[in-house]
Image (cartoon, rainbow, N blue to C red; front, side, top):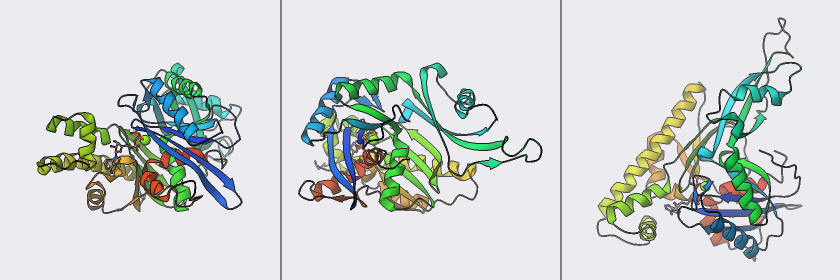
Length: 361
Ligand SMILES: Nc1ncnc2c1ncn2[C@@H]1O[C@H](COP(=O)(O)OP(=O)(O)OP(=O)(O)O)[C@@H](O)[C@H]1O
Ligand SMILES: [Mg+2]
């Protein structure tokens, strides 16, 4: 979703519920280079499912990250996700004389669950989707069906996001959607655009699924069951505070009652897997013949113990973690490879956002 016409290099800024991630890439003669990467953990409740509840910690952490990483470029690409944005593929019939914007604006009203006057609308026509119908009756050119990816974001949320970035001294030039940023990062990391696969981002507050066929998203869903749910359950069952709950979840504190913890983890892993299977079934029903080859996962919570093997077992599909840095060169004097491998899965969306500046996608 373009808010401005910036053509320059952009810095990717992913404001998640748990952490802010910042990535800067450069296009050089040697190919794409990772220039800077940083992450800062937010106080609990400052950002919830993409909505900024407390702006000052977000502004401070953003300023701190840009200063620490010595990023001079202030033009950024950021993204929305979850309930703050609606993504839907619709099919419109092109009509002569009516600009696509107007046509889609009219069509969109029936799909948008919010008041249409309170949303920012954007769309993208899907490559190769133009289908001529009714040739000879009304003429192919006049009656072409076009698949369009419709994106609607609540104005308030967009304005809040822009304001926070501006307060941090940044210029938001592109507003994207987590699911698409993840897809862009996956495409450069895997070097492939063809085939059918499911992309899953498991963060702190969101489980985002994007099923893609030959580069085109065919099914998207967002649910609010993710990593912080596990922490909450631990807090509830063990009577500890949030910090301690997080340490227990990450295995940094060992427990006597390991069985209870295993029970909590298993329950959540089953929920997440159920959600992904529902998405796969839905995509399969809506697009007969679709053959998902594998599931590519990212987000901090994709390493919850037991999740990946369970998902693999229940779906029969291979489950692979996305490494967003795979095709990127970097200077080992500036960036520690050990740090890189520890943050990779959490930086996928930010890498996808930083790419928006390079290609013309
Ligand atoms: N090794 C691990 N095992 C389990 N959970 C982990 C691990 N490492 C990080 N997490 C969890 O990952 C979550 C943070 O992931 P991420 O940075 O992708 O979320 P986010 O982008 O901030 O949130 P969201 O996208 O949901 O708004 C936290 O809940 C954290 O506890
Ligand atoms: Mg996230």
